[in-house]
Amino acid sequence: MPEERYHADYAFAAASELLSFAEIERLARLHTALGVRKIRITGGEPLLRKNLPALVRALAGVEGLEDLALTTNGVLLESHAAALREAGLQRVTVSLDSLDEAVFASMNGGRRDLARVLAGIRAAGACGFDTIKINVVVQRGLNEHTLLDLLAHFRGSSSIVRLIELMDVGTLNRWRLAQVVPSAELLDRIHRRWPVEPVDAAYRGEVANRYRYADGAGEIGFISSVTAPFCGGCTRARIAADGTLYTCLFAEQGTSLRGPMRAGASDQDLTKLIANVWQRRDDRYSELRRTARVAERPLRRVEMYRVGG
Ligand SMILES: C[S@@+](CC[C@H](N)C(=O)[O-])C[C@H]1O[C@@H](n2cnc3c(N)ncnc32)[C@H](O)[C@@H]1O
Image (cartoon, rainbow, N blue to C red):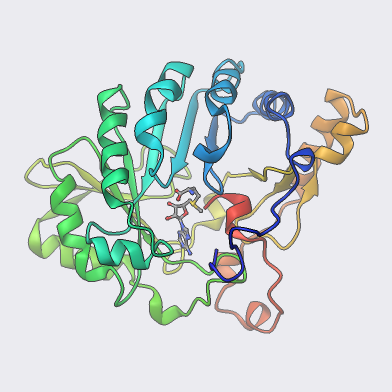
């Protein structure tokens, strides 16, 4: 979200264009009836949504849901963690690209919020979120040199660091393959400092390849969607705040659920619509990324702040 475009006066969607909590809960109910077992609240920054614990409480009560998680930049987590936990949130993921104040700021629009993010992680741990995931997007020449310090900080804690290859999501991050640090290279560097061994996937379609430190200091994960795409095992649908359903992080278009919902569609109509979109999906952008078919086409992909990461 480059500052020059998403400045303080940028007109995001009007409140009336956003799904209400009741509409989100209804969609959650319809999706779980279709087999969804896990919901992640992401963004944008979810902790900026007013009264978020009320939404968490509603979602936590949806029948059939087994896992309710949230991804945040952590800046507001210290003051929100207890209420979210109390409302029924099960897991928290915090994005944190570096523990070096200057590097952190350079990757976060100049914000110097590192201490607040660390306080947020501590607060979440203290109020009962026992395994907090720490998402680190690694970029060549930017934060890669601070990675071992970050891993050292979280080794031996209950947090699990996940190293993510930089993706060309949306149209604005001026991605170049040269910015990507392949997971295999990171694994090699880490292994030389602290020997690691692979851990079996916990479930089919798990996006992170997991490793454990041989000395028992915990686990790390690698999300390698550039060098080892996993489109074939992807089971994720995404619903933007305005109610558009996307079947891929790299989608060029989605399907409005808000339109039919506000026009009076029944649960049955909506279920049919959702099932139809899901059955027709054939997205595999990450597998096609380097083919001519993708390279020649103009960029119209959905921006990441709409679909969460
Ligand atoms: C888009 S953010 C949204 C949630 C929240 N605002 C946050 O910062 O965690 C979700 C995740 O996407 C990751 N992410 C953002 N841009 C990325 C990129 N170009 N490639 C890979 N992951 C990215 C972030 O690091 C974060 O962990």
